[in-house]
Every structure is written in C-alpha cells, then in structure tokens.
Image 1 (tube, rainbow, N blue to C red):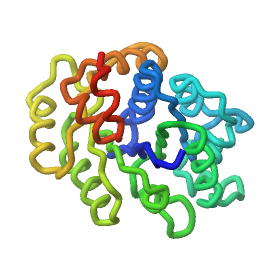
Image 2 (image 1 turned 45 degrees about the vertical axis):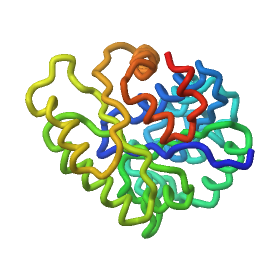
Image 3 (image 1 turned 90 degrees about the horizontal axis):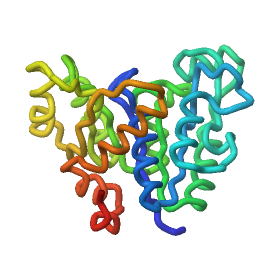
Length: 246
C-alpha cells in the first residue's frame, strides 16, 4: 500500500487504559473488514521476553494478526520501568531505526496501523530521545487517551500542546474510564477539554470490568455506538466506513 493510514496512540499519563482503547479500536475495525496491523514498539514488565508481553498479545488478539513478535513489539524488557531504564538494566539500547523498519513492514502488510506508545509523550527512550521523537518520525497522527478525573485537563492540555509544539499532527483525543455515574469533575471534563484542547473529542468510553479481552470487547461494542464515531473514522482516514457504522 502507498498510503500511510493509521494512528499513534499515547496516554496523558500511566494507567489511562490506552492499551485497552487501542485494542478496542483494532477489534472494532477488524469486525468491519479493515485489515488492521498493531504495534507496541516497546513493552516493559514482560515476564518471558521471547514472547509477546500482555499488551502486545492483547493487541494481536484484537487485530487478529499473525505478525511476528519482532514486528509487533521489537523491544521487550523484563523490568517494569521506563523504557530507557529497563533497557539500561539489560545493557541494551533502543534503536529507533529498528522500530521504524518494523513499522514500515507492517504498513506494507496492512490497510491501517495502530501503534501504541509506552506511557506519555515525554517518556525517555534512549539518550536524549523521547517517545515524542519516535511519534514524530513515524509520522502518524496522534490519538491521545485521557482519563476523566481530577487533573485530566492539565495532563491532556500538556500532551496536546506538546504535540503541537513538536509538529506532531493530532487525530484527536478520547476519554477512557468514565464512571457510569460520574461526579461533577468527571462529568464536566469532556466539555472543558473540547473548549481548551484544540483537538477533536473522538469518544468518551465508560469504565468496564472483567478480563482484558472482556473489557476490549465491551469497549469495541461501545465505540460502535458513540455519536462521535463519524469524526473518529474521518480523522483516521477511514471515511468509507462511515456508511457502515453499527
């Protein structure tokens, strides 16, 4: 394929559920006939580094791909630490060119590519390189996953403004883990962020319980019914799916 259709998914901080959201988008698209590729370039806290970690495995399951672990997650580290620290602990160095090559291979194989970062944009990878530098070199629009509770306005604005300052295009942002009965802080977050973030709100997803696969399945079902779905598909470059919603 010649086009570079896909998104790079980042979080406003750790624990916002960006893996679940990335996997849910992959599952939603796969169920609608899109040939989806998935990638988590770096995963830490992997028990058996000869295999995909929990996040990489979940992404592969959601997308239904048979791509090799070296393509889905080129770097897997045992220590549950920041990528640069985990790599140093194993006396290894993260080479961005390895990630770029794997991403290009996946791009050639798939219609749409979802790449999930590690943590937020300012996570260090190697030397003076940040995750934001990788995102900029990959050149996919950025999807920001945010949480709904106190502090999210600050964290989300810092992320979107940093992306804009580094010339990383924004696909938009999604709020994940919205309580089913939100308090005033959570309920007001979407409107406040739409006003301030200079980016499109592509969805508000509610908190789900269950196993990771159960959560991803529930989120994919929820994505199919959100009123912002046409905006999400349009911003992802998947306009042809807008008439096939549901």
